[in-house]
Length: 401
Image (cartoon, rainbow, N blue to C red; front, top):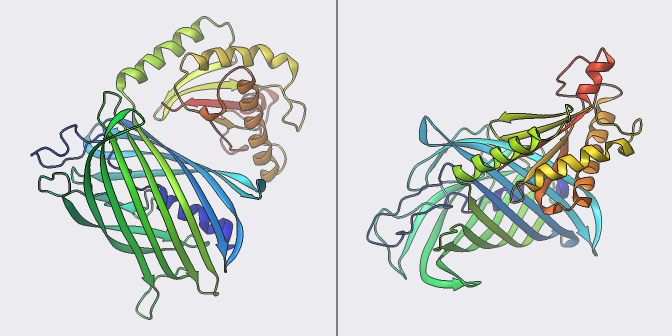
């Protein structure tokens, strides 16, 4: 059971690499002191490709996609919170051998302008803390600095060990990557942990040995952003004697989201929705984005098959989403509180995926979608009446950026 339970945690440990350098100033390596500014809103897209072995036996090839959406809080420019979404597939010989896992992790932290993080341990992300951290002295090509950080690594039971590390950074200089000018930084650190009699943590982890090497490219043009490739090699030893080995690489993109872009998307959706005569499509503004709510969607009973009379509404939703073609859409299925909790949850996932499939057929890229189900856990009306159950039987589409 270590394979599927501990790998998602490993992914989070690896994937938060260099989360905090999205909008470094253009004068990063001038005579100015390095400072850090994430902007008011930003997103992360990360794709991880890993090979997994247990006790030397090859178990599969893991592809995982990870997306985060973080927002600065108005009362404190160092205060950020947001959500991280994870999609996971385990493949062997190009065949899917484990169901994709959708997970959502919330976070809330303070980050100073040198990269140091202050966060309550109740938050599971980010698991890299105070990484990267920058020199307080001005740097030039060839200069290096060393800074401390910590990783939280979890076992299959949800217990963690905290591992301090020292990371070495080297500024390589300016270059060109895929026709775009970049500044390049190398980063490298090792994880070393061995449980002893003075260790009072309750984790099943006995030892950890790992190395992480990252090449960071900060784009210098007006588009900005960052691209990172991280090579990962990590072994986790468990008290029962199992050794889990994970090797591979992570590709990460960071993009700022301007306030102008967010407001433009908002106005486009509002205008398009006003032109549509469909009272079963509602618009709501929430902290994490605009939400299109589709109530009383007609499926075959206890099925994810959408009835033909919903084709017009699918056309309308597709038209609305095409107005904000550069956004990410989170599709969440909800059911009425009928049947078992497990059946409600499974059905809500299947129905949210059916909505995604319909929208992809109408010309929207599948890469723009995240989907999950919440069963009957979050009703918006009473489940004691047919009218209330119809409202609860809904799909919500959040425009995350």
